[in-house]
Length: 352
Image (cartoon, rainbow, N blue to C red; front, top):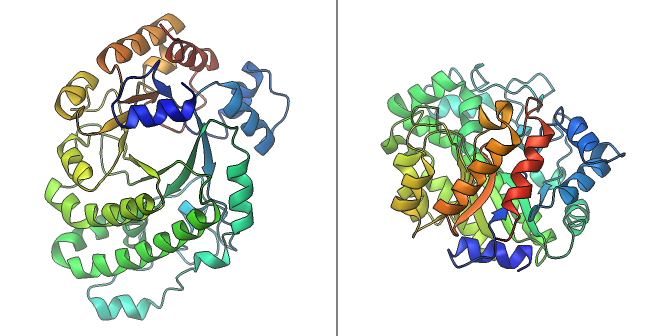
């Protein structure tokens, strides 16, 4: 099987020759050590391109090109603090944003926020160029994010946003609707520019903690799932499979994500409560595929290569199909030894 065949079989929970596997998107500070380990001389985008090929996984992930006066990443598109700069590396959800004091819809209008138009900052030709760099046969994955929950929380500040969900839900929903409008248009630009060249997308919102959801399942269903469903339906209309990301323990709302049409749940965060791979397989394995499972908090950081390989073997036994083996967090950090990354993919890509 080639990577595409393996991916689609995994999504459909059909037999595979080996698991599909994904490196993730290593943090920029983790990349130099990985370049050195894999013998890559180049740096920057060229080095990252070669790393994605050298690892030998099944995916080629592509970020949406976004260049605005205040941001150089689409996940940092909104200047909630009106200081003319959005630092994509050090964003916070807790600092009160410009909607922090809004108590009703009139207050939301009075903020007079200048909502960015993604058409001004996304170059369709650059979208095509990035996707066309993917090697033939690889799964081309668009990193859309479209994190409307996180962005709306940042617009108010997390504490204010959560209080508004209870005390003034229409205020929260008014801002969320504008954020959703931005992402749906941005995604359409990317999908149209790359039509026929893209296979899957990753969208998501971090709504889980190590011990459970950050808000009740009922609140997730009201404030997050409707946006999720719109984003999934949009991607499906272009023939794309959807990987839905949320860090942490999200088991209580996996049925809701399945109902919304999500194809793959990412990640299986190995040490989070309720995210045991065997339990997830037994409860949901006939309804949805998963991605992740190899712990980035302890195992990949402190474990030996042999321990990493043993975990991969265990995951392969639990999930004969239906699992994309990957680190349990897509942003590999500098504390993970490159030798353990190699051990992960050496074992994941073996055909027994």
